[in-house]
Length: 65
Image 1 (cartoon, rainbow, N blue to C red):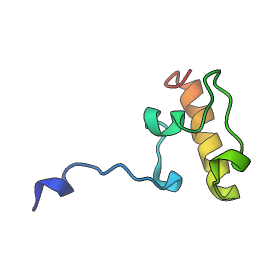
Image 2 (spheres, rainbow, N blue to C red):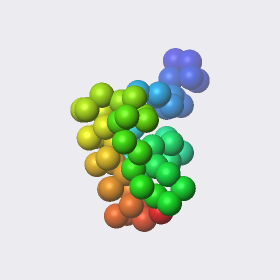
Image 3 (cartoon, rainbow, N blue to C red):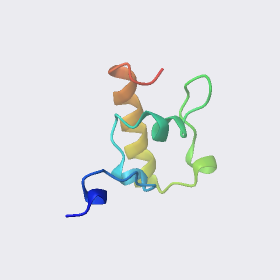
Image 4 (tube, rainbow, N blue to C red):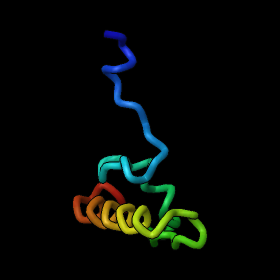
């Protein structure tokens, strides 16, 4: 096996994010911590709901502030 398969790749698709992906989720929040709307992110409704749930979960786990 190649070494690249051992390292998880960073997906740009919001459907593959985890609540542990701090940098990826921070892209969808403002400096004050508010979730950016679909109008500005360009996500589909399903992707926006998933990202919102992940951000809220990360806040609850105190990963995002």
